[in-house]
Image (cartoon, rainbow, N blue to C red; front, side, top):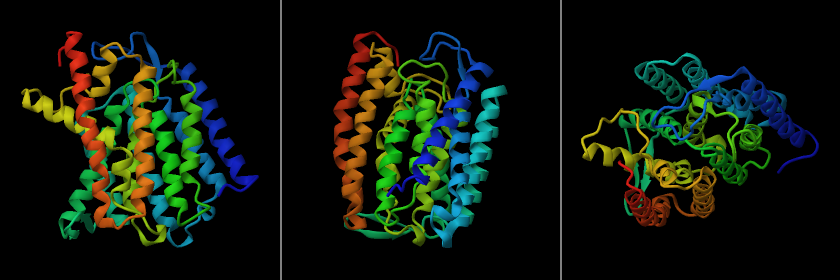
Length: 345
């Protein structure tokens, strides 16, 4: 639970620092110049994630690692935070001067490998009717693929006003609830939510600044890494499926779009604006409406994740079924709207 006054003051500090630094980044004006596939039409500052990162890390330091409060596993938490900061730095360099996709990918793989080697790879994955499947030597590879893959999924989905910030806050709230089941004084997710809110007020409903790769790479890596870290004994009862369920619509959107483009013979790494949320925006829906419908889905995913964690691990994958079934008509509806508007994809 949140204890007054220290915890509340730490959350306020995260918000205020993020708010102040984001304002500074607006005046610093690292420009995002729109291109044909962009969802915005005018030049807008980016790298607003700098404020989010500074507000988050400074507040975590003020809170004190000893208050987080896993004394026996504090080194692992520091490793995750340091690794995620590397992703933020790489994203910032990309925002400022651009970088090769191969370079970014290699850094992501190297950082993910380091994190997994330090924290431990996935050992087993629970499946319905099959129980725990031992991954053996494939655990390291699957863990790295998960972290690198989700880091880029998050980056791909940061394309509209509030599209990254609002789901981050929602997911942090539910992660806080899930973690507090075992540790009532662990507040790191609420600190991240507060820092994200300090940025979000400049990004939604109208964007004065964008999150940038500095923010999306950091957030994607942090959430993916948390999915690995939280399986350690110090964090109590958790599930390998929690983070994938919380972000199911993100993962589904990216995988569906990649498969559809591959079937049409389009390049896997080719930049595009054909994600479902982008097609819905191009079909006439405002950023506010598109982000809002995705936010509602995130709330539903969070609620179901709370029920999921109370059930045996081998049943957890079954909780994805309603979202996958619901994604089918959702996809058909968006594609139909895009076709009626004559949008090529």
